[in-house]
Length: 358
Image (cartoon, rainbow, N blue to C red; front, side, top):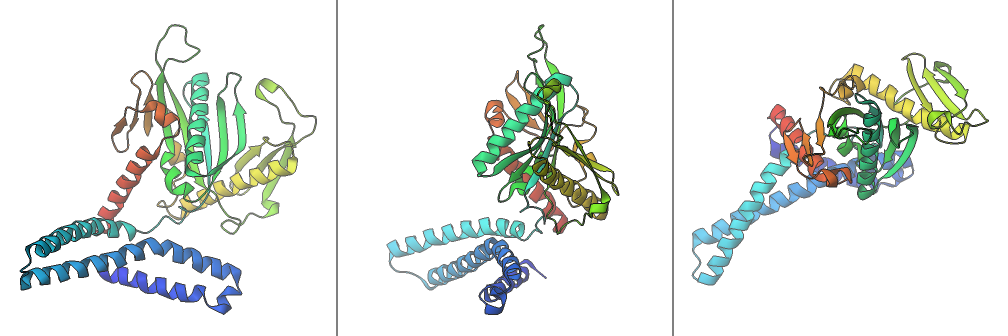
């Protein structure tokens, strides 16, 4: 099946879904209606571009025919020639865009995410940079109109995090943040360094698509739930009640904990969200390496040599080693202006996938 046949098949499916969405029998079944509606919305960008492509091709043929028949009016002929040039340029753009639109979508792209940041090599300085990355992602999420909700955090006394996990909720969160998984390296003079020497530290980031309850089947008998008293940095602010929760998933050995909320019930709800995401990720890794990389492959050992990106403070630059992109915009990036980096990664990913299908 060539590209035009595939596009026509997509438009046919789109029209079929359009009919189903307005079918009274479907409207009575809300889950079916929502499923069809989501599928219809997912096809809309492809169909819109395909319909424009057909109009552009028709316009090109019409203009070529007029010019071949001869136009006596110079001004009108010039206008037709200009329009033909514009249509040909637009056709070239659509010729590039349509194959990308036809690429199979990652089924997780529309999901919310759980982000886990851990200080790796570098001790206190790595923990401080983990805090910088958390603030960077929080600001990026805010600019996208997404909501950030801390799930669990292990803060240090000077303002960093040994580890922090948080949920990001919003349209397309995973489709953009999934490129942030890996080891992030920072080169700077630590606040704890009196000699002014530049240190290199590493922080690991794992981005997991949040699993719905229907995605994974976790039975109560598969869980061991322990409660304990939550404490702040250095053991301060210890609660008198056992509100903190630790959940162990016995079949996989996955352990999650949450002590961020004062309510044991809320901590349990948050811990279960993280657990479902981790169990789903592990299951997907076992089923197909192509879906949602396993955390070990995402973040390696936390060693500085396994890096995806370096943040160099003395030079004010950020380098993404996967695509060889360097931006001298360190301050802007740490303030959450990640669009240039993430868009470049999306483009590179699309180019790689196009090579595989062509």
